[in-house]
Image 1 (cartoon, rainbow, N blue to C red):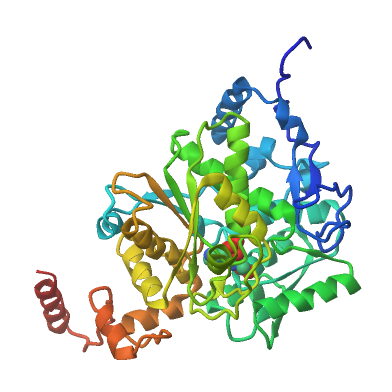
Image 2: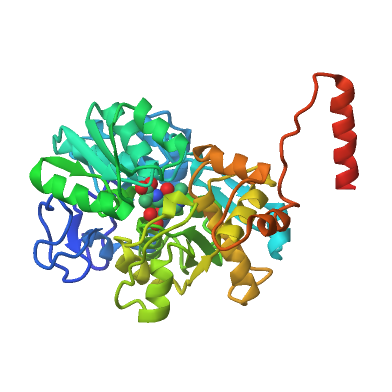
Amino acid sequence: MGEGPQPITITAALDHSVRCISCGEISPSPASDFRCFACGDLLEIDFPGWRLASVEDGTKLKRLWRERRLSNHPLDTSGVWRFREVLPGLEQWSNAVTLREGNTPLFELPRCAHAVGLVRLLAKHQGMNPTGSFKDTGMTVAISFARQRKFAWVACASTGNTSASMAAYAARAGLRSLVLIPEGKIAWGKLSQSLDYGALTCQLRTDFDGCVRVLSEVIRRYPVYLLNSVNPYRLEGQKTAAIELLEQLDWCVPDHIIVPGGNLGNSSALGKALVEMQQLGLISTLPKLSVIQADGANALYRTMREKQGRELVAVEAETLATAIRIGKPASWKKSVRVLDATGGCVEQVSEAEIAIAKAEIGSDGVGCEPASAVTLAGLKKLVKNGFVHAHDSVVLMLTGHLLKDPEYAIRFHRGDLSVPHVADAEFRQLTASQRKSPVALGASADSVLRALEAQEKRDA
Ligand code: F0G
């Protein structure tokens, strides 16, 4: 090879290293808690070889990834492993555990755009993954590494979606799985998944943060592979949602990407993908990535407002958007870095704002779970305060499927959902135009037609 940058090899980046985000120390074989052995901070995957990447490499990658969409090879039909050049490579590709994750649709939301005051609004629906949430994109990668390292057990603490996803992928891989969830704070759809997929499901009398504490002791005392998002291999898989999004946009960079924030793994992963895509010459500018939290679980929001992102403000979390009911987010430092790198911001929204936004997304025929709807609720605020402009291109990341939490939707539409800080009667009045309660009728065509006419009058 002569002078100048050498082309990156278009095979998987087998030569990744695992590095501490604070002290930069390399962990040749990460500890079971995925913490830096030197300073105890979080780890991330680094690809030193990419520093030599050239613009031609970016063009080659785009072509290769597009060509793979015509292939029926199991790795190519996965919307994660199709991008394997930007993932840590497996020693044997046969270790990859895939359920054809990723490949999620990008939808127009015309009614929501109108409600928010934007010309156009897009949503990438990660709830269309095999187990109904974005967790599958990370799980396929991390479970594959668990299998490669010959673990018998995998485990996670979860607000419900990670556990559903882990249980499914563990079942596919022939591994045993241990789920720790907060009792009574898990949506039924999610709990039923982890049971059906055969996980040992422990409902602990504590919250998510308490489950994390218990699990950290379990992994110290027993050889189980940790699958919470402190596991950096999970975030590598979750990166691909941003890559797939850019490919769907023909590599035209949107002005804004808006994501919900809970444990803050997802915003960290998407931000890492954006920065890496820029390094690899796939895109030349970065979208602003903003994070929205429920105001009852607003640790990142307070961390930025009160401590300028320098130290975590942990909170006692409470929200009906149970997926993001998290008070001490593990990946807060990574998320702060993403806000800095992309120029995004963090916003908080109330329970009433979440419920209304969820019904508005539903009215576009898409639907999502409450935690995903914070994105639309937050976007309204960002438009109002001038951070987002009417002609900006904006993509909401919808993280979970509507059927994950049908109880929330039914109670909302029936008018018996109680949200904190708003009187029930006032909330019912606020949401009257979005609510579509079921109509109980006698079994006759006459009564059905009367209901139809009444509806037409209401809509006129
Ligand atoms: N949306 C949904 C539907 C989620 O399930 C989660 C997190 C988030 C958003 C927030 O993502 O944690 O990466 O900031 N659910 C986790 C779980 C914590 O256990 O299922 P985050």
